[in-house]
Length: 183
Image (cartoon, rainbow, N blue to C red):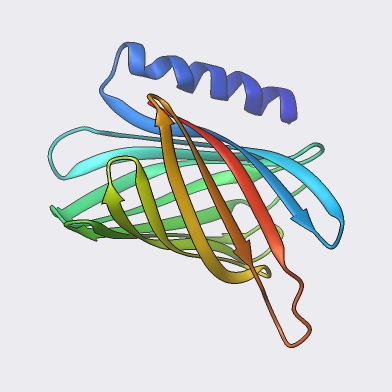
């Protein structure tokens, strides 16, 4: 499974050479309760016309991964929605994912939810673009909580983002430090 995900990611990374697409590859480093892990995340999206598009997303850990693809609909300049299906390592049931993007001026919101396979999961963030190099906002992720998020554009196509999230009555703080390559 892991090898198939990496091959698909390499093919999808080459897609911008022949299509008008955008996306990112992120190396996320996560620290919680002394445990450190790294995961790779991949996002790709493009358009068939001004309202209908496609998207793909993959997440890979050391011994686990998942991948999705689907269709998106841009209802207005400030609203885009998508739904997709995919597979998850070690699960026979399909995973279904939905995303929502809303934005106006310097403010935007992105949320991705998943169902099926190993169960429900989500990640969401609301951001304010201070300038072309700096964004601040809030991020929330299933079982990790909510906290501030900062993203800094270093130089094209590289940026970094950081967050610290806390969850529950007995909070455990999770830290993310991420290198992002946009295309």
